[in-house]
Amino acid sequence: MSSTNVDEEDPYKLGCNYVASGWLALFHFLIRARFAYNNDGSDRILRIADVGTGTGIWQGELTRELPSSTQFDGYDISDLQYPSVSWYGPNTTLSKLDIFKPLLEELKEKYDVVHLRFFMTVASDDNVDVVIENLKGMLKPGGYLQWVERDWLSFFPKTVNHADSANAQLTAYMSSKFFPKADWIFSLPSHFTGCGLEPWNEDHLIGTAAIGDMIADAAKRKWFKELRARCATECAKGWFVDWELVAVVGRKKD
Image (cartoon, rainbow, N blue to C red; front, top):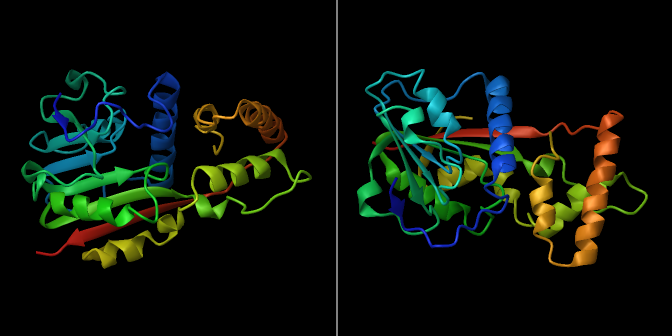
């Protein structure tokens, strides 16, 4: 596998171990069950890029659904979760890429479809347009960008007190400390049009252990771990989160 404009250290917030790979797979199948499709927007698919591919599960499934002549290229800032390329066939590649850095010439106007999802932990209101511009740059004229995201704002309370549920306290803490600039998720369609793309179509505790591990203060880290345990107890009694998925498809002008 090749490496493209990536620093030696992999700033992967939620980890790259087997637990992280497991929840990525779970989210993949949750999204598939919700939307009942893997790819949307184009009837002339020749070459597809999956940016932030993680374990490569999305493009791996598409290799079984689209003609063998379709080329799939997966990119991620870390290759620690990549399976053997032989799992997905000869028409698949997996490479390292930092999508926040200037796009390399070799990737410009290369793809008919670019797919991306779950960037809520790394993108922010300050840099999401940089990502969209780079993704758009990877598209051929007339190509399609598909982005799927969780709408964190649909369930993150802004303020809480000690009398509130453990889940409310946990999500409010994560919102203020780790995702303070996430308004872009709800306004993703506007960011697409602002970057020149034509509009085309428009279990919550997973991953929180990795977030807790990032807390530097030992006392706060202990509090967070105990709060997660209380959250699990609440969920066993019927507490749940009804969050929204945001799926946006944009087309690059001819």
